[in-house]
Length: 280
Image 1 (spheres, one colour):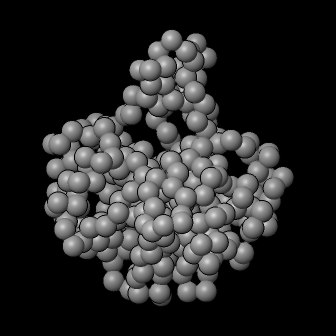
Image 2 (image 1 turned 30 degrees about the vertical axis):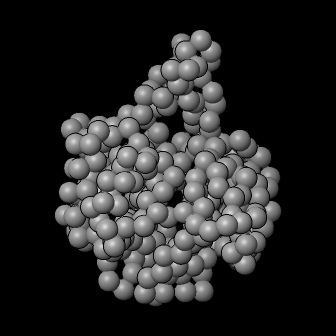
């Protein structure tokens, strides 16, 4: 089945006219069906869709990778176009996610969760389906979540915290999710931010779905805090899956992006706004 993944929102733009933002959103067109994966921060979704000569009418489902504002902020815009639509997310997607950076040491952490509550989104037409474990949601589309974090692959972004009643503690981002999309050959993995750790996600796909070969890995890999040694381990793991195409963006980080590009060469691309990845 012919599948196209179009990048609607990202930190970078692929050609003039588009709006870049700290956020991520993709449109998945699969046969005569259409799905939205994340909705960006809400700045560029509408304009970028117009420039691409696309819209969200007829989108059958919205999948959410997690509850940060840069993936959920555009939901109001999306729902205004889709009308009532099913939204697939982990039940902890409305966790009170916060950010605390060294520059904010004197103040309270900043809230970075969904700008709108579940109730507000429901009023706009969202019909939520809660998924806690990896499950096939559509023909050829798996919602990958509930990923175990292996001790030797533990990755915690120290800036991400949640209220714990007495202050703030590290945020495990338990609502993290990815998509696995089947093609006529090998599957494509579409990442939102890979907060579970890209190595853990790949291990989970191999162990749970028995998949050992991937056609492509696309999206945000959250490698910005990884050391050169850990980035090298990610590259080695990608190669172990025989990945034919690597298209990264958003939270990957410049150092990791350069390293991935240098290694994968013609198999590499930056998944900026306007990029289209097509598969049979």
